[in-house]
Structure formats: C-alpha cells, structure tokens
Length: 131
Figure 1 (tube, helix red, strand yellow):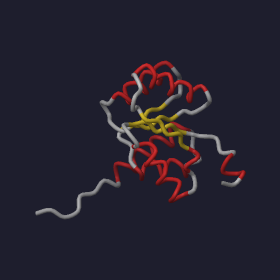
Figure 2 (cartoon, one colour):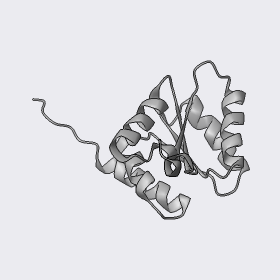
Figure 3 (cartoon, one colour):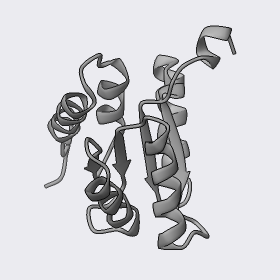
C-alpha cells in the first residue's frame, strides 16, 4: 500500500451482519482503490450498546456518514441513535455496492454525498429475466 493510500481519512462507516461490510469495502477497494475511505464494522458478537459505542467512536473522529445493511436491523437502530445524538451524522440504510462507489468518488459535503449515493443505489436495482 502506498503512503498516499495509508494517509486517507475515512469518510464513512459500513456496518452490517457477518462479513457484509468487509465484502463491500473489499469490492470498493478492488474497483476503485478507495476502500480506505470506508471503515467496516460487523455486528457479529456485538451487543446493541457495543455497536452504538463503536459507531460513536468513529463519529467522534470525524466520520459523518454511516451505511447499514437493513432498514429495520440492529445496525440501523444503533446508527440512528448516534445520528440523533450527534448533529450532522447521516444514516443510509440498505446500502449496496453502486451506492458506495458513488460515495467514494464524491467531493461534496457528507450529507449531499450520502443522498446522491442512496439515489445511485436505488437506480441500479434491476430485475433481469423471469417469465
């Protein structure tokens, strides 16, 4: 890894079940080389309070966008609690790879980057085939 890649300041946290976050961030890194802009967090083996505390620690370092896997899942509930307590923190639930790709290339403010990333993620859902 180059010195430039090591000095990247993370812009978002991705949190979800199992290896969800690590898998998405790995794909972002492979496609763009910008995986360092994201921090992965699995809820495996964590209590809701531990998840909330972990998200809060990242927010305290300057991260302003939290991406989660399921709208009603424990990761989203914890992220929403942090967002409610910390001004300027945005939660994007139901994240997918196209959304994260858009986000890592954005130079907009965190809330605008998150909104556009969510729009991109929705736009890319497609059904192919069937009867």
